[in-house]
Image (tube, rainbow, N blue to C red; front, side, top):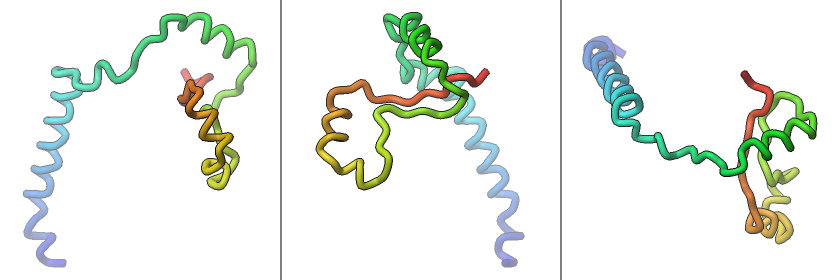
Amino acid sequence: MAFLVDLWLPILLSAVGVFAVSTIIHMVVQWHNNDYVKMDSEEAVLSSLRDHGLKPGQYMFPRAESMQDMGTPEYAERCNLGPVGWGCPGFR
């Protein structure tokens, strides 16, 4: 445990360095800027979701009821047909 006391400064400086580099990559370089694509019919999709009256929460589609269901041909077909995604409606 004594070796951790000797390494506290390098550990702290490494953490600050990683935070600084990740901040620069995220905010300046905008590395992940194209990871989220805007839908062409976004308003129609949002309107449809509003019409279904979803409660706030995390949703995924298609959703399997169990791990065993994920291995079924029916679930694989639903995934292959698409779309596949997740969303958090109701969060502001």
